[in-house]
Length: 351
Ligand code: PMP
Image: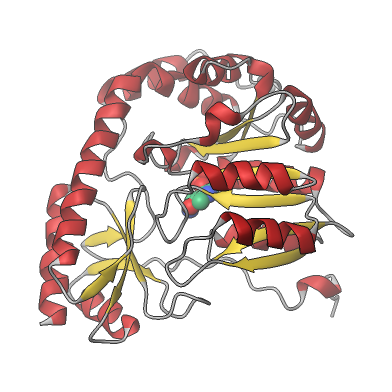
């Protein structure tokens, strides 16, 4: 039998089990489809695509639309197939064999996973028991790891915590390499590191169309970063990686900013209702700036509560066996009815 690379043998793939249920609140997607008018505009635009030709390699229209939406230059935008591919491209360019990547755990598993896939050494710094990390801990971790790439995730997945600006500044100040702030959920929070992006700072802020933009099916994410960094990423990513349909889908979505803003507002209001519901139950609730909430049942093992919810056809993310997250479950904010169904089911399971 042929053998995979030695360093990959011990690695496990990324798992997110899907089960057929009535209420699916486990993958942090938007519960709402994109606006009907977006469907119409997209369908009409598709009719004009020259399918025998490669798409625009630079994705110029899409980049310009993303740049305009953030008030930056198109040369500061790098787009790819989901923010996961953005992260992978950054790690291919700035990490890899002989280089070190720093994460603050628990955080989004793919940061460390992709870093290992590309052959980097991963140093995992620890967050406190309440999942925060302070400036001193950041400085200490950077000091011993000297990372080529350091990650923060704000709001952090799976904890929901928004990183205080002081932490991002401390990391930028201390880190010798690239600082990546993964902001897959930033639209649901009240602070973003975007305003810190500047040509003379090795900072990349990563966003996605998968959550706010109701477009997880499109697979489109992007980074806002200094233009010299974007130029390096453009060298590393495969040619024509963004197909014509995706470029159109993303560009047209940006014409519906108000509709997307309304969706975000609704999800945030529902998040507060879910948090209130959770706080009336025997569970620890972690403060969230995202479209999900992490909680820990106090009276029963997390796994048993997850199963109890599943028995009532409600699927949440079972983090209870993940390192540092004993007994924790993560619920995505869904439609009003789905959130009510979740709270009712949880009340029953815990009674
Ligand atoms: N970053 C974080 C923190 C996430 O939670 C996710 C999705 N689970 C991603 C990036 C990847 O999102 P996508 O590839 O769909 O843009």
